[in-house]
Amino acid sequence: MTSRHFRPDVTVTLIVLVWAMYTTPRLVQSLTGVKRRATVGDALPMNPLAVKLEVLLLLLVFALCAFVILRGTAALPTDRRMPLVLMLAPWVYVVVRDLYIDHVPTRGGMLYPVLVVAIWILRPQLRKLAVLGYLVVLTAVMCIALGSSCRKVEFSFRVQVPQWHRRKRFCRSVF
Image (cartoon, rainbow, N blue to C red; front, side, top):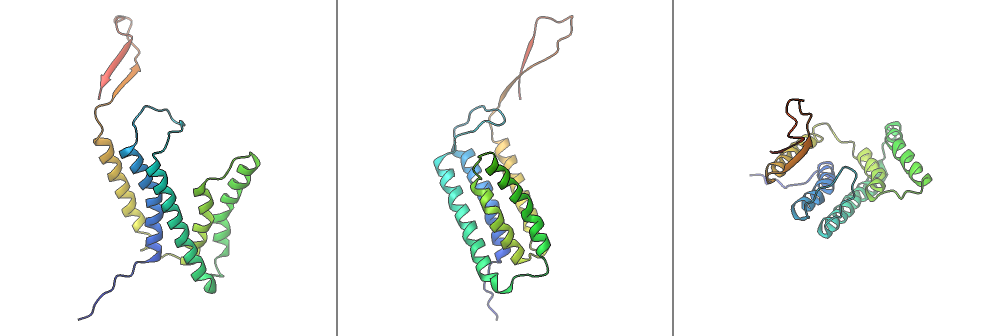
């Protein structure tokens, strides 16, 4: 009888950690934060728990990327430098543009080159990237669950009313 030891794959772990870094704090914010009406582009205050969770997950992703880079420096791929340059070029443009307009790059934006180099060193196989599909489905299920658990929301909007019916200028409906 052989015993199987669970050895997590670094590529899958990295993908799941990056997914968790972007979804978990927003899920915590949605479940514990104050609900209020906002328009697109409004800066909403983040829950302190969500901020701490985001920073913790960012540090975990950065540590795992640093581990991969340090472990893989002895055997860097030499045949695939052009894809690395092409993946880093948009980031360089965005950072230079942000610095030119006196905008500080975000924490997630500063993680991007480290993440790209780590994935470049790992050379993930297509079957390992299948975890992305499962995470997309999980994200969709979470969004549907959050959307269906909301109470009835009242929307108001202006409706074009025919000339023969001038009494109601506004229509209020409950969905």
